Image 1 (cartoon, chains in turn cyan, brown):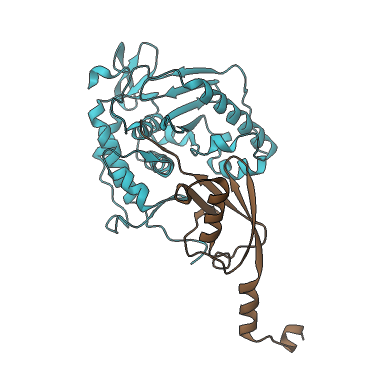
Image 2: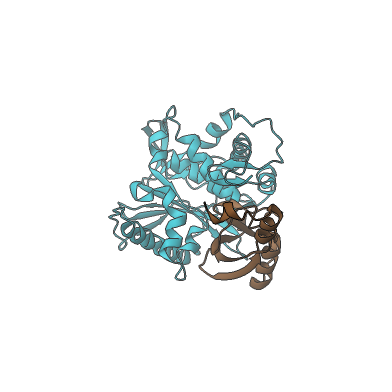
Length: 277
Length: 99
Protein backbone atom coordinates (compact mmCIF):
# COMPACT_ATOMS: atom_id res chain seq x y z
CA UNK A 1 0.00 0.00 0.00
CA UNK A 2 3.04 2.27 -0.10
CA UNK A 3 1.75 3.89 -3.26
CA UNK A 4 -1.03 5.55 -1.29
CA UNK A 5 1.33 7.16 1.14
CA UNK A 6 2.14 10.81 0.82
CA UNK A 7 5.18 11.06 3.07
CA UNK A 8 7.37 8.70 1.05
CA UNK A 9 7.07 10.67 -2.13
CA UNK A 10 9.42 13.48 -3.13
CA UNK A 11 11.76 12.60 -0.32
CA UNK A 12 15.48 12.51 0.19
CA UNK A 13 17.51 10.71 2.80
CA UNK A 14 18.87 12.53 5.81
CA UNK A 15 20.54 11.36 8.99
CA UNK A 16 19.49 11.66 12.63
CA UNK A 17 20.21 10.05 15.94
CA UNK A 18 18.03 7.19 14.71
CA UNK A 19 20.16 6.73 11.59
CA UNK A 20 18.99 7.50 8.08
CA UNK A 21 15.46 8.71 7.59
CA UNK A 22 13.40 10.31 4.87
CA UNK A 23 13.18 14.06 4.66
CA UNK A 24 10.44 15.31 2.43
CA UNK A 25 11.10 18.16 0.08
CA UNK A 26 8.94 20.26 2.33
CA UNK A 27 11.41 19.51 5.15
CA UNK A 28 9.08 17.26 7.10
CA UNK A 29 10.78 14.31 8.74
CA UNK A 30 9.23 10.88 8.22
CA UNK A 31 9.45 8.09 10.80
CA UNK A 32 9.51 4.91 8.76
CA UNK A 33 10.66 2.73 11.64
CA UNK A 34 8.08 3.48 14.29
CA UNK A 35 5.83 0.48 13.58
CA UNK A 36 8.66 -2.03 13.38
CA UNK A 37 10.32 -0.50 16.44
CA UNK A 38 7.21 -0.76 18.61
CA UNK A 39 6.49 -4.28 17.41
CA UNK A 40 10.05 -5.40 18.15
CA UNK A 41 9.73 -4.77 21.88
CA UNK A 42 8.89 -7.59 24.27
CA UNK A 43 6.31 -6.07 26.56
CA UNK A 44 6.45 -7.50 30.03
CA UNK A 45 5.47 -6.19 33.41
CA UNK A 46 4.51 -7.45 36.83
CA UNK A 47 0.93 -8.04 35.71
CA UNK A 48 1.56 -9.20 32.14
CA UNK A 49 0.22 -12.63 32.99
CA UNK A 50 -2.81 -11.26 34.83
CA UNK A 51 -6.23 -11.62 33.29
CA UNK A 52 -6.67 -9.35 30.25
CA UNK A 53 -10.16 -8.67 31.60
CA UNK A 54 -8.81 -6.76 34.58
CA UNK A 55 -8.37 -3.00 34.18
CA UNK A 56 -4.85 -1.64 33.84
CA UNK A 57 -3.38 1.61 35.17
CA UNK A 58 -1.42 3.86 32.85
CA UNK A 59 -0.41 6.71 35.10
CA UNK A 60 -3.66 8.15 36.40
CA UNK A 61 -5.66 6.64 33.57
CA UNK A 62 -7.55 3.39 33.86
CA UNK A 63 -7.97 1.14 30.85
CA UNK A 64 -11.01 -1.02 31.38
CA UNK A 65 -11.96 -4.28 29.73
CA UNK A 66 -14.02 -2.63 27.00
CA UNK A 67 -11.24 -0.30 25.87
CA UNK A 68 -8.73 -3.16 25.96
CA UNK A 69 -11.08 -5.13 23.77
CA UNK A 70 -11.17 -2.30 21.24
CA UNK A 71 -7.39 -2.25 21.06
CA UNK A 72 -7.30 -6.01 20.66
CA UNK A 73 -9.90 -6.16 17.87
CA UNK A 74 -8.33 -5.63 14.44
CA UNK A 75 -11.16 -3.57 12.98
CA UNK A 76 -12.55 -1.83 16.07
CA UNK A 77 -12.79 1.93 16.37
CA UNK A 78 -10.79 3.32 19.29
CA UNK A 79 -12.30 5.32 22.12
CA UNK A 80 -10.92 8.19 24.19
CA UNK A 81 -9.50 5.80 26.80
CA UNK A 82 -7.51 3.98 24.10
CA UNK A 83 -6.13 7.25 22.76
CA UNK A 84 -5.35 8.91 26.09
CA UNK A 85 -3.93 5.83 27.77
CA UNK A 86 -2.13 4.80 24.57
CA UNK A 87 -0.49 8.21 24.31
CA UNK A 88 0.53 8.15 27.96
CA UNK A 89 1.94 4.64 27.60
CA UNK A 90 3.92 5.66 24.50
CA UNK A 91 5.46 8.62 26.29
CA UNK A 92 6.48 6.49 29.25
CA UNK A 93 7.96 3.91 26.91
CA UNK A 94 9.81 6.34 24.64
CA UNK A 95 11.12 8.47 27.52
CA UNK A 96 13.23 5.58 28.77
CA UNK A 97 16.75 6.86 29.25
CA UNK A 98 18.10 3.84 27.37
CA UNK A 99 16.37 4.99 24.17
CA UNK A 100 17.53 7.72 21.78
CA UNK A 101 13.99 9.13 21.89
CA UNK A 102 14.37 9.97 25.58
CA UNK A 103 15.03 13.69 25.08
CA UNK A 104 12.48 14.34 22.34
CA UNK A 105 9.81 12.40 24.20
CA UNK A 106 10.37 14.26 27.44
CA UNK A 107 10.11 17.59 25.65
CA UNK A 108 6.47 16.84 24.79
CA UNK A 109 3.32 17.59 26.74
CA UNK A 110 0.44 15.34 25.72
CA UNK A 111 -3.04 16.69 26.31
CA UNK A 112 -6.19 14.70 26.92
CA UNK A 113 -8.74 14.30 24.13
CA UNK A 114 -11.25 16.14 26.34
CA UNK A 115 -9.05 19.19 26.92
CA UNK A 116 -10.27 20.97 23.78
CA UNK A 117 -13.78 20.89 25.26
CA UNK A 118 -12.46 21.99 28.64
CA UNK A 119 -11.12 25.18 27.08
CA UNK A 120 -14.62 26.23 26.02
CA UNK A 121 -16.22 29.51 27.09
CA UNK A 122 -18.19 27.98 29.97
CA UNK A 123 -15.29 26.54 31.95
CA UNK A 124 -13.39 28.26 34.72
CA UNK A 125 -9.63 28.62 34.79
CA UNK A 126 -9.55 26.50 37.92
CA UNK A 127 -11.36 23.68 36.16
CA UNK A 128 -9.06 23.76 33.14
CA UNK A 129 -5.95 24.04 35.31
CA UNK A 130 -7.01 21.05 37.40
CA UNK A 131 -7.00 18.92 34.26
CA UNK A 132 -3.97 20.21 32.35
CA UNK A 133 -1.42 21.23 34.96
CA UNK A 134 -0.06 17.70 35.43
CA UNK A 135 1.48 17.85 31.94
CA UNK A 136 3.68 20.82 32.97
CA UNK A 137 3.20 22.05 29.44
CA UNK A 138 4.70 25.46 30.20
CA UNK A 139 8.08 23.72 30.50
CA UNK A 140 7.72 21.74 27.23
CA UNK A 141 8.65 22.55 23.63
CA UNK A 142 6.00 20.45 21.91
CA UNK A 143 2.31 20.27 22.78
CA UNK A 144 0.55 17.18 21.46
CA UNK A 145 -3.21 17.58 21.12
CA UNK A 146 -5.30 14.57 20.00
CA UNK A 147 -8.59 15.72 18.52
CA UNK A 148 -11.90 13.90 18.28
CA UNK A 149 -14.34 14.88 15.58
CA UNK A 150 -17.75 13.71 16.78
CA UNK A 151 -20.43 11.92 14.80
CA UNK A 152 -21.22 11.87 11.94
CA UNK A 153 -17.49 12.15 11.17
CA UNK A 154 -16.37 10.01 14.17
CA UNK A 155 -12.76 10.64 13.36
CA UNK A 156 -9.47 11.01 15.26
CA UNK A 157 -6.86 13.52 14.10
CA UNK A 158 -3.80 15.06 15.73
CA UNK A 159 -2.41 18.54 16.19
CA UNK A 160 1.22 18.94 17.24
CA UNK A 161 1.90 22.50 18.34
CA UNK A 162 5.35 24.05 18.66
CA UNK A 163 4.58 27.00 20.94
CA UNK A 164 7.93 28.74 20.61
CA UNK A 165 8.04 28.71 16.81
CA UNK A 166 4.28 29.36 16.52
CA UNK A 167 3.67 26.43 14.24
CA UNK A 168 1.21 23.59 14.38
CA UNK A 169 1.42 20.40 12.38
CA UNK A 170 -1.85 18.72 11.53
CA UNK A 171 -2.12 14.99 11.00
CA UNK A 172 -5.17 13.41 9.37
CA UNK A 173 -4.64 9.83 8.21
CA UNK A 174 -7.12 10.43 5.39
CA UNK A 175 -4.98 13.32 4.14
CA UNK A 176 -7.96 15.67 4.09
CA UNK A 177 -7.70 19.38 4.64
CA UNK A 178 -11.27 20.59 4.55
CA UNK A 179 -12.26 19.88 8.16
CA UNK A 180 -9.33 21.57 9.87
CA UNK A 181 -10.76 25.09 10.09
CA UNK A 182 -12.98 24.38 13.09
CA UNK A 183 -10.24 22.35 14.80
CA UNK A 184 -7.67 25.09 14.34
CA UNK A 185 -10.01 27.63 15.91
CA UNK A 186 -10.56 25.32 18.88
CA UNK A 187 -6.83 24.62 19.20
CA UNK A 188 -6.02 28.34 19.21
CA UNK A 189 -8.61 28.89 21.96
CA UNK A 190 -7.03 26.08 23.96
CA UNK A 191 -3.52 27.47 23.43
CA UNK A 192 -4.63 30.92 24.51
CA UNK A 193 -6.30 29.57 27.66
CA UNK A 194 -3.27 27.41 28.43
CA UNK A 195 -0.96 30.40 28.30
CA UNK A 196 -3.31 32.46 30.45
CA UNK A 197 -3.90 29.87 33.15
CA UNK A 198 -0.22 28.98 33.40
CA UNK A 199 0.76 32.62 33.87
CA UNK A 200 -2.08 33.23 36.32
CA UNK A 201 -0.98 30.17 38.29
CA UNK A 202 2.54 31.50 38.67
CA UNK A 203 4.19 29.48 35.92
CA UNK A 204 5.66 31.83 33.32
CA UNK A 205 4.57 30.77 29.85
CA UNK A 206 5.82 33.24 27.28
CA UNK A 207 4.04 32.08 24.17
CA UNK A 208 2.63 34.45 21.58
CA UNK A 209 -0.86 33.36 20.60
CA UNK A 210 -1.13 35.27 17.34
CA UNK A 211 0.44 34.75 13.94
CA UNK A 212 0.65 30.98 14.12
CA UNK A 213 1.14 28.87 11.01
CA UNK A 214 -0.85 25.65 10.62
CA UNK A 215 0.44 23.02 8.25
CA UNK A 216 -0.93 19.61 7.25
CA UNK A 217 1.71 16.88 7.43
CA UNK A 218 -0.31 14.23 5.63
CA UNK A 219 -1.73 15.37 2.32
CA UNK A 220 -2.41 11.94 0.85
CA UNK A 221 -4.35 9.19 2.54
CA UNK A 222 -2.34 6.79 4.66
CA UNK A 223 -5.54 5.07 5.76
CA UNK A 224 -7.88 3.44 3.28
CA UNK A 225 -10.02 1.38 5.67
CA UNK A 226 -12.86 2.65 7.85
CA UNK A 227 -11.59 1.85 11.34
CA UNK A 228 -7.91 2.62 11.97
CA UNK A 229 -7.75 6.41 12.32
CA UNK A 230 -7.26 6.19 16.10
CA UNK A 231 -4.37 3.79 15.60
CA UNK A 232 -2.85 6.15 13.05
CA UNK A 233 -3.10 8.93 15.62
CA UNK A 234 -1.21 6.74 18.09
CA UNK A 235 1.40 6.14 15.37
CA UNK A 236 1.66 9.89 14.76
CA UNK A 237 2.06 10.51 18.50
CA UNK A 238 4.82 7.88 18.65
CA UNK A 239 6.56 9.48 15.66
CA UNK A 240 6.30 12.90 17.35
CA UNK A 241 7.73 11.55 20.58
CA UNK A 242 10.61 10.10 18.56
CA UNK A 243 11.29 13.53 17.09
CA UNK A 244 9.67 13.20 13.65
CA UNK A 245 6.86 15.11 11.99
CA UNK A 246 4.91 12.22 10.56
CA UNK A 247 4.84 8.40 10.56
CA UNK A 248 5.56 6.74 7.24
CA UNK A 249 5.13 3.01 6.74
CA UNK A 250 2.94 0.74 4.63
CA UNK A 251 -0.69 0.70 5.72
CA UNK A 252 -0.47 -3.02 6.34
CA UNK A 253 1.90 -2.33 9.23
CA UNK A 254 -0.65 -0.29 11.17
CA UNK A 255 -1.74 -3.53 12.83
CA UNK A 256 1.70 -3.59 14.47
CA UNK A 257 0.91 -0.33 16.25
CA UNK A 258 -2.47 -1.66 17.41
CA UNK A 259 -0.96 -4.92 18.62
CA UNK A 260 1.97 -3.20 20.38
CA UNK A 261 -0.41 -0.78 22.11
CA UNK A 262 -2.56 -3.63 23.37
CA UNK A 263 0.41 -5.64 24.60
CA UNK A 264 2.11 -2.61 26.08
CA UNK A 265 -0.96 -1.57 28.04
CA UNK A 266 -1.63 -5.14 29.15
CA UNK A 267 1.86 -5.15 30.66
CA UNK A 268 0.95 -2.19 32.88
CA UNK A 269 -0.03 -2.75 36.52
CA UNK A 270 -3.51 -4.04 37.23
CA UNK A 271 -5.63 -1.16 38.46
CA UNK A 272 -6.24 -0.96 42.18
CA UNK A 273 -8.06 1.91 43.75
CA UNK A 274 -5.52 4.04 45.55
CA UNK A 275 -7.63 6.25 47.75
CA UNK A 276 -10.56 4.02 48.56
CA UNK A 277 -10.57 0.28 49.17
CA UNK B 1 -12.86 15.53 79.78
CA UNK B 2 -14.66 16.04 76.50
CA UNK B 3 -18.39 15.72 75.85
CA UNK B 4 -17.82 12.64 73.78
CA UNK B 5 -16.04 10.92 76.59
CA UNK B 6 -18.78 11.90 79.02
CA UNK B 7 -21.61 10.70 76.82
CA UNK B 8 -20.29 8.29 74.24
CA UNK B 9 -23.08 7.68 71.70
CA UNK B 10 -23.93 4.07 70.96
CA UNK B 11 -22.03 2.73 67.95
CA UNK B 12 -25.22 1.88 66.03
CA UNK B 13 -26.57 5.37 66.46
CA UNK B 14 -23.49 6.92 64.93
CA UNK B 15 -23.66 4.60 61.96
CA UNK B 16 -27.32 5.35 61.35
CA UNK B 17 -26.68 9.06 61.45
CA UNK B 18 -23.88 8.81 58.89
CA UNK B 19 -25.84 6.62 56.55
CA UNK B 20 -28.88 8.86 56.54
CA UNK B 21 -26.97 12.09 56.21
CA UNK B 22 -27.35 13.85 52.89
CA UNK B 23 -24.59 15.31 50.80
CA UNK B 24 -24.52 17.85 47.97
CA UNK B 25 -22.61 16.70 44.92
CA UNK B 26 -21.73 18.75 41.87
CA UNK B 27 -21.50 16.91 38.56
CA UNK B 28 -19.36 18.87 36.10
CA UNK B 29 -19.07 18.16 32.38
CA UNK B 30 -16.04 18.80 30.16
CA UNK B 31 -17.79 21.78 28.64
CA UNK B 32 -18.39 23.45 31.99
CA UNK B 33 -22.05 22.62 32.66
CA UNK B 34 -22.75 21.83 36.28
CA UNK B 35 -25.68 19.95 37.78
CA UNK B 36 -26.17 19.61 41.52
CA UNK B 37 -27.56 16.57 43.32
CA UNK B 38 -28.47 16.05 46.95
CA UNK B 39 -28.34 12.39 47.93
CA UNK B 40 -27.87 10.23 51.00
CA UNK B 41 -24.36 9.16 51.78
CA UNK B 42 -25.54 5.58 51.54
CA UNK B 43 -27.12 5.91 48.10
CA UNK B 44 -25.33 4.11 45.32
CA UNK B 45 -23.82 6.57 42.90
CA UNK B 46 -25.16 4.48 40.03
CA UNK B 47 -28.52 6.12 40.82
CA UNK B 48 -26.98 9.55 40.47
CA UNK B 49 -25.35 8.46 37.23
CA UNK B 50 -28.68 7.34 35.81
CA UNK B 51 -30.37 10.56 36.87
CA UNK B 52 -27.61 12.63 35.31
CA UNK B 53 -27.78 10.70 32.03
CA UNK B 54 -31.55 11.23 31.91
CA UNK B 55 -31.12 14.91 32.59
CA UNK B 56 -28.64 15.43 29.76
CA UNK B 57 -30.41 13.01 27.41
CA UNK B 58 -27.54 10.57 26.93
CA UNK B 59 -27.08 6.85 27.35
CA UNK B 60 -25.52 6.26 30.77
CA UNK B 61 -23.15 3.75 29.15
CA UNK B 62 -21.63 6.49 27.02
CA UNK B 63 -20.70 8.66 30.01
CA UNK B 64 -17.73 8.19 32.32
CA UNK B 65 -18.00 9.41 35.90
CA UNK B 66 -14.78 10.20 37.74
CA UNK B 67 -14.15 11.20 41.33
CA UNK B 68 -10.69 12.59 42.01
CA UNK B 69 -9.57 11.16 38.70
CA UNK B 70 -10.73 7.62 39.41
CA UNK B 71 -13.67 5.97 37.75
CA UNK B 72 -16.74 5.48 39.92
CA UNK B 73 -17.93 1.89 40.15
CA UNK B 74 -21.57 0.81 40.26
CA UNK B 75 -21.50 -0.10 43.94
CA UNK B 76 -19.75 3.04 45.13
CA UNK B 77 -21.55 5.38 47.47
CA UNK B 78 -20.54 8.81 48.78
CA UNK B 79 -19.75 7.12 52.08
CA UNK B 80 -17.56 4.43 50.52
CA UNK B 81 -15.62 7.09 48.61
CA UNK B 82 -15.30 9.34 51.66
CA UNK B 83 -16.95 12.13 49.71
CA UNK B 84 -17.51 15.44 51.41
CA UNK B 85 -20.26 17.98 51.02
CA UNK B 86 -19.97 19.96 47.75
CA UNK B 87 -17.46 17.58 46.20
CA UNK B 88 -17.31 17.37 42.42
CA UNK B 89 -17.79 14.41 40.11
CA UNK B 90 -16.33 14.92 36.63
CA UNK B 91 -18.20 13.49 33.69
CA UNK B 92 -16.84 12.81 30.24
CA UNK B 93 -18.83 11.68 27.27
CA UNK B 94 -17.19 8.75 25.50
CA UNK B 95 -15.44 9.68 22.27
CA UNK B 96 -15.22 7.03 19.57
CA UNK B 97 -13.74 7.22 16.10
CA UNK B 98 -12.30 5.13 13.34
CA UNK B 99 -13.21 6.52 9.96
